[in-house]
Length: 125
Image (tube, rainbow, N blue to C red; front, side, top):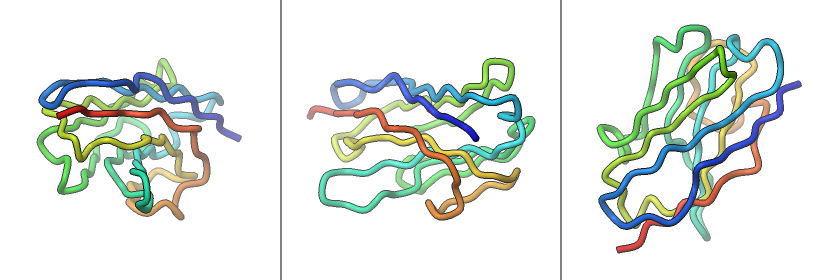
């Protein structure tokens, strides 16, 4: 079992930055690929970014955030991060952290086994 707790959301002006954190429980955190998803009001949950297990040498981003967001992990702290820069109003959503039961990067929610409760990000224009 893995429990995930997100933090770092908030209200920011367009063009600003935020860093989301996701703290994981469990001794095998390093063996899980991790992902970030988001869900805006009235929309389906969508993929944002993912990072492979272990050293996190493989990352993958949605086209909408490529070049603006960076996913990283610190296995010593059992934490995965999402650094968000040049934020836009369309980035407004609840952001969820997820853990996959394997090492490979995935972009669909069904490939993730554990989910956090989400943290809200609001970008004002």
